[in-house]
Image (cartoon, rainbow, N blue to C red; front, side, top):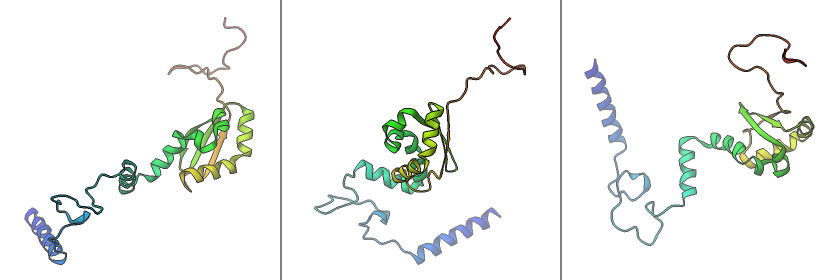
Length: 162
């Protein structure tokens, strides 16, 4: 059975080679042959490339555009929303297009809810459309008295601890 699979794979390879023979004058990027000698006065794939361009091509080839856009929301938050809003809020989580933002106070949370459409427009302009589709804005988290893996249900701390 293994021999039959191997023979079928070899036959498929021979058919593909017969339909698309390799060119011997390999001068392009995709020819599969290594270029020899000097590159000459014109543009050549062996010429030094800008790092940003090479990185952009790598990210496009590997399908990393969406994770890059999502990371930009967190990494460049001040650039995306502006310095004043960034000083009073921070992105917490991005899940399925819903960005959770935590404000430093309930007053700032209310302001950000009123500015949600503007924030979405700024985010879309900076990182691309359909990366963030909805904002979930909340105020600061209340302190929790639940500490440790084992706790007793109750009313929590009161005036006296005795």
